[in-house]
Length: 461
Image (cartoon, rainbow, N blue to C red):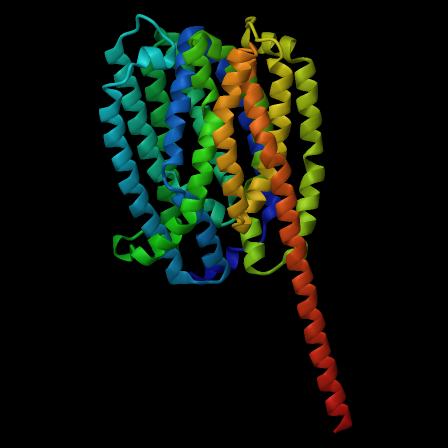
């Protein structure tokens, strides 16, 4: 364990650069993957698959924040050299996640039998039994993967964020290869896509977990190390993340579902294309941010306040090239996507510029969210997130149906809700950091005064 802790050091910049470069490769793979799947499934089935993915992504919000809680607590334990606590934290996290995901799988499988999936997915005349099978199978893969993907939170805590980016790219690449093979030998079926999607996720994360725990025995989970006290510590912090995650679910994951229910599955595809293009730009920037969360947790533990303030200012400058890239893509969006997809999609009026606004605010907000999460400044974040969740769907519906903007209106509602955190979080975090710096300065002044008085006293003697 001693050697392991020696390797645990501040290599944030190295992992920021590597994560960003890997994410760019991920972008290229994604640009290839989307038209391949779209061609394989067709517009309507692709819209159905996009909506299913959104629904299944909700599972990741029901871990009551244990993954994020583990990330912060394990970072602190590693920074302070608490060797036994590391194993207890990891073991307890796996135990609680397994229980939660098992419950979700059972409940989700039962409930799915009674839902009208044609209405939810905006389809007509589809085979309900096949849809239920597809959704249950996808749910099985997602819940299983969620348990074994805790390895990613551990990698973040170990300051190895770039390794997580490698896992994501490996999954994407394997997924793309298998879809290309399916495209050659089979007709487009959702069941085939689900099998490829699920098996690639599980395989990559399982392989990563085995390699990591063989190499680092100190953090290998052990049933005998499960500790309710540590489980409570992780879940207590995790519950705060959970509230924010649930609100984020409403904010970011309901647009496709609303479009599908109001205007049909085929309308999801143009919106999904706009969303994927701009989200990819924000995603590349987020890849550079990946090490920042745990780096700020470590800096807070070590009371390195000046470093945190400098890092935050540098991150603001670093986001400018990504904003410029988003603007350029918005200007040339139509010809770019025409060449990229090999076909012309019908986009709602105004959806591209509002997609640009969404992208810029995501870049700005995610930067402060990563810092705030690392510092565990979650009280204001929770309040803001709850307000956003409350106003998002009504605003989207008003702009879509009452104002008559349809799919674009749903995105406008999301933009307005997102603007709240874009304003509040920066103000709150800067005030907190400056307050800590002032307190640190006062402590230095007091210590200096004590030393000076001691020296004067010794001189008089």
